Amino acid sequence: MVHPEIDVDAEFRALDAALDAYDALRARLGEREHAGAATVSGWSVAQHLFHIALATDLALRHVRSLLDGKGRLVTQEGELGARAAAVLSSDRTARGVAQAPRMVTPGKDVNPEFLSNELRGAREGVAALRARAAEIPLAQGWIPHQELGPLNATHWLRFARLHAHHHLAIAAEVAEALGPAMPR
Image 1 (cartoon, rainbow, N blue to C red):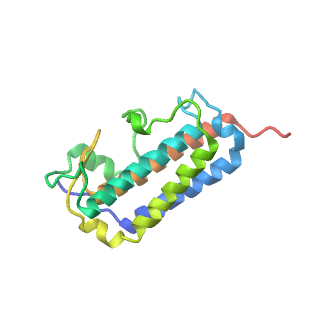
Image 2: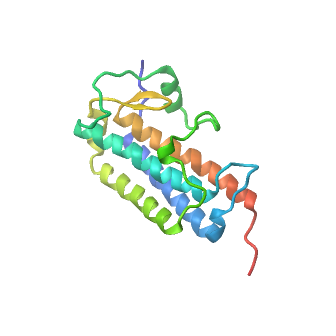
């Protein structure tokens, strides 16, 4: 299977842009980040942000494990499947195709301070891996994704970026459905 071309530096820039957009969205919405818009999504903006912080952290931990060549999920055998190649070579992911694993599914209520800490952790994870950017395309091994199958380090980085932008689009739709803030 041919691997999609992945520009590691571009993926980091795009992850930074997604995290910046999340900060801007939170600043614009304030307390309304916890409101839902059921016509758009079953999750509030805060729940999407919490999910993406956890999922990004998980994907970046997989990249680190592959860079270090150790971890209980790392295997040396793997091949990128057709579905994974299609997803990774696209700039968008379809909505409603997969369900988030329990470990990255937000609860009904998201603590704003905890959310801030998780988003800060995602930024720190991106910064730490950026220092090892040249190593990422050279990393050996695979770690399975629950829906896409085996992914290597560059695939996991690309997935983190695609996933972050996927939820950014949904969170922005939820925010739009909430309408403008009412003056106090």
